[in-house]
Length: 427
Image (cartoon, rainbow, N blue to C red):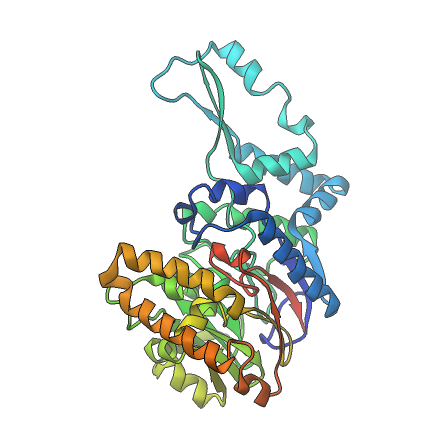
């Protein structure tokens, strides 16, 4: 089955998602320790995610759910089921903790695996792979420890990218997210959209990749490194030009906080052919390195200034968003077709984001006070002018159709509509 995307504004035909499941509950016990921005209401996040999926369906997009894809395929295909068993086997282990004496081997084995993995149903196997349970068996009894549940799996953008050649599976930068790629790879194979390339060197995450027809932007920094980008360029895409965008530091944060611009799509995105929506401050701070395709390989063309200048040279008009709107994931919208997008409602999201920023500034004023002051200033101006993104004069003037969706809770894991969706096909 055909898969891939030439540009971000092509019509979205098919998308892969994963609603925030039980694994999210465990992450919310300590949000920042699990790469989340803040605590949020899990049930409300699920409702917001459901609304996003319904909006996509109403726009003619075929929405595939990760777990349904795997379970349906495993019920009919022995190869998929065997891979699911292998994933569960890899994730399920045992350990003895605290120097306690383990139970005798015979009893331990009986209590550990009363039913062999190949005899278990597919949904049970999938949950084992998702939650990564470990049994701690001692004389005091049996405890179940969840080692590394896939808390961030609902951000389905990152495990792979859709390029002009097809699907490319990435390689996650953090150990907490590493196993997510196995889930996405299995689902893509089950859908008949097997990857054309796999990143095996360095790291590459989907939030750092934005295709634009004659060129593509690839972020380089916290989550995607130079080795991963070189791997991508060896066989994962064939755009005439690749612009590597080096992750910017925010000028209002004296001690660099890379999470402010964690992925490329957290500060720039394309809403239509020739129209970018971005933070001007971060565009100015983003250094661009260009590679051009020649004789079926990419060769360095050199540094090309900053991203603001690069996009202007490519003929893109930029609709500016404020510092507060950028922190509220204004650029993390999802383009459904040229000029038609689904976006987080920044007006609804701003109070939660400001509250979290106030907490950070109170804990570390030297680092965050200037950023907080700017965000609070933006809030007053945006309220006074009724110009919270996407309700901006420049948006209407450019004929964009931006549908805001309530994402106050779901964004708490560090991402918006763009981060929560994996495009499989655009045409």
